[in-house]
Image (cartoon, rainbow over all chains, first blue to last red; front, side, top):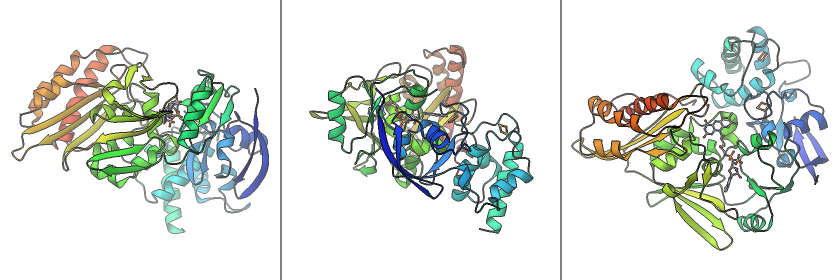
Length: 162
Length: 293
Ligand SMILES: Cc1cc2nc3c(=O)[nH]c(=O)nc-3n(C[C@@H](O)[C@H](O)[C@H](O)COP(=O)(O)OP(=O)(O)OC[C@H]3O[C@@H](n4cnc5c(N)ncnc54)[C@H](O)[C@@H]3O)c2cc1C
Ligand code: FES
Ligand code: FES
């Protein structure tokens, strides 16, 4: 009973036309397997870990809980698209590197995409607000301390050079 | 952990969606997908057809008319969170929504989806019980209204027929200046509550409690209105002592037992959280901070 649909999406500024997808394909698997964008990680595939977070029309969402067909006509930003250029990192990426915001890196794409939206809405957050903002993202390595420090540091850098 | 095969339909109108529901066998409606997609990925549900409501027009709005707040089924939870009408006119709903999942799940999850999923600990379900909401469903012959008290028929089972769509929920608003508090105990921020308490209070000019509503979530298969407690405080002056004594009756509520907590622990939480909710709603204690913004 497999059925397919043709969709068109814009991912990280690149327009993809006429992509044939099985209707049950999740957006996460579409990004990883069809577009080869494996920066979006899959931890749990049932909405709990946050590793697969992407921005759909600028709003964070779990890509394991979306179907690729639902993204038809929409704009998606993944971890591959956050750096301003190939040789320059996003201030969040720099702050994560400088504050030990990652160890194995599995949760990092989801942390960064979540924090991009959060810092856009709340450029000067408290530590408690950062902790609530990343409460839907699980990290098994860092103990979160470095991630929270990185987020606060990134906020400071982004306020200084908006 | 991949969804099973199904046929996908994305109607544009309510009529089209109701039509599909009426003709397709073993169909499931897809709203925000924050509960249904995990169930599909884990293959707890195996529908032959998925009817996606995300492109249906006219199901996303928040409006107030004549003291009633009406919210369309496909209104996202984040829209409720940032709504000025909700924050000022329905503070209980505002406080509750901040405790529903996380930013990423509220960006997709809908009001109607949460009510239909009917998790015993879902915050929105408790708010509907606390405010005596009316559920509006649409079927092929028109619209039907269901009083919230009649909405849960069994564990996670709403009184909606297979050929019906929940299209809106109506919350009768309390007087301007009423007290409200939603408090819950969860292991981590954004988790479903183990137990929650919602309190609404109206006081007359002399400070006497004129009207009260107390709802405990997570204790039974649906939220419970504690009428005994409501009656015990109406006509009295709010005080820490009154609430401490009156809330003890929550220990007698029938409680479910699961991997997260035994019944006795839930009964204890019901007494403690209802007291805290009443203290916050009456201004005896400050509101607990749950807001990210
Ligand atoms: C990590 C995580 C944490 C969460 N934490 C919480 C929490 O703390 N509190 C909480 O309450 N929820 C929580 N949730 C669930 C919440 O996010 C969901 O949004 C909600 O339970 C379902 O709403 P939905 O719009 O996503 O519906 P869906 O998942 O799309 O649908 C849920 C069910 O309702 C039916 N349905 C949906 N819309 C209609 C309609 N209009 N008419 C008839 N039937 C309909 C569907 O067929 C399905 O059976 C959490 C989810 C995740 C992934
Ligand atoms: S993989 Fe999507 S939330 Fe875990
Ligand atoms: S760095 Fe390993 S899971 Fe977060």
